[in-house]
Length: 237
Picture 1 (cartoon, rainbow, N blue to C red):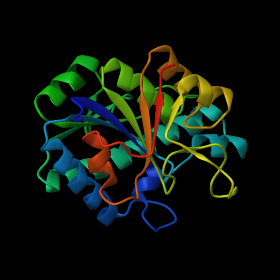
Picture 2: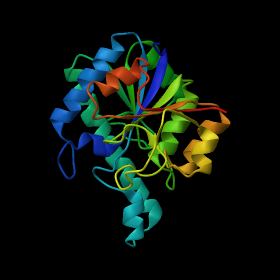
Picture 3: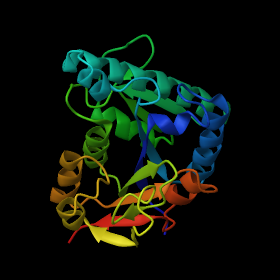
Picture 4: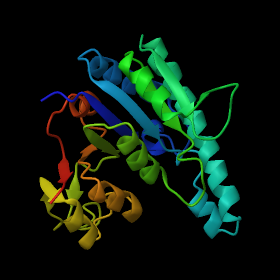
């Protein structure tokens, strides 16, 4: 199975590699090569990238910073990651556009739904940054929203060293059981934390499938983008 159009959600942590923070250019280049290979199959690709490798608004808020300010700083961090990914993609020979939900005219285009679709139809990879442009929402929610707006076949959730959805945290519970498939409703009911609850509910209400996979597996991004059955599929009832 090859998807026609997909949205890939990349966490900021995925760009860190083995570092404690920031961006590892070698990791960005490896991701870009995998995305290039998938793009050559004809799949249209949108990417939403997080900013947790640079700044976490919720963490700063818990430490006393005003929440909206902290979240806006997190949005700016996603722009930095998006520009790094664009640089790596272009060096790999992939046409790429960064679209931002908050105005930064000197470095990125504004996010406009029809513009994003047109870029993808022309074969460009679209990297969407700054979440959905408002505080109090995670990049998970932004990814679900963009996936629905752009009418993708599946939302691909790239996890760091977690190869799917489990009944409990496999890092702390050796008895955790991996699901090959599970419904949105079951994932919400069991509080499995595939993504934040509002994002999961949005996917459930609009029958958007989610594939959760381990980004560190060999060629995982390429395999997920072209439709290989990796990890766990979260589906409609």
